[in-house]
Image (cartoon, rainbow, N blue to C red; front, side, top):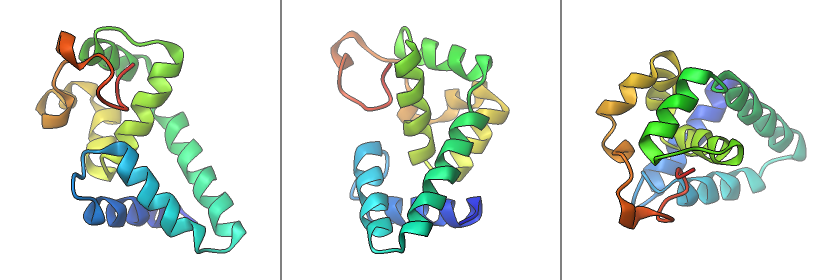
Length: 123
């Protein structure tokens, strides 16, 4: 499975989700879709995911996650990048290329104090 196919699975999961910004629901739907495939494809999808996680492991993106979330631990940055992947290819690639682009992402508004544990993207 190449990245193109991986992104197609994410987009299909987002299309089926009642709230496409809900990263946990998107991940569940993508996992459910993959569960019907041969083990080799599941492993290849995991490799594509880890490649994207590696590509997004940058200091500027971590700084953006820190600002958006009012702080960001090591694990929190992993969760943030997983959330970012679930937002789809366009948002992910734009954010990796220019983390300031997240300022235009409606679901990336800085955390308010009452949002402490309300989203998977939170650090």
